Amino acid sequence: MRIDLITTALDEVGRRMAAELHAAAAAAIAARPQERTPALLDVLWTAFTSELFAVWVKVWIAAVDDAELYAALAPFEPALSAAFAAIADDVAPEHLPRAEWTHRIAVALDAMRGLALTQTIQPRPAQPRRDAWPATRAELIALLDR
Image (tube, rainbow, N blue to C red):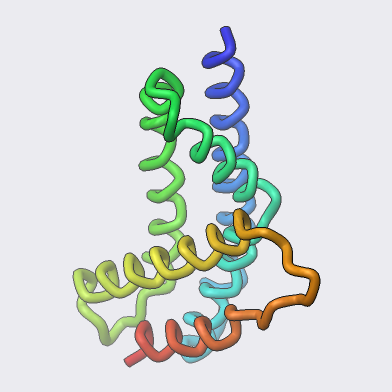
């Protein structure tokens, strides 16, 4: 019963995240070619810093020590990752082979996911930390657009 409730809730969280991503991605897709990568990164970063992502992370952290929960949640991760990747595919530069774009986007998504995870679970300091996203964003734009 507990596992069913959690998986139902996480399924809904994943569906909402995917729907929000697709809705927000329209602007990135419609942008001029030289503005697509920054727009894509902004859409993805908004998703990674959303309350829905925080919920997703917290449930997955709980699943690390609960084999039954982990097994029940395992099918959800590929679907959400596919939603992130599908949006990126729609913004791929024409000059870059698809395989190269897919590789670069995977690196970018891993970096963004890691930064978002760190920001989600790290203790809150008394003094605000430096926002790492602007520098990370600049590096990812350079990686994706080179």
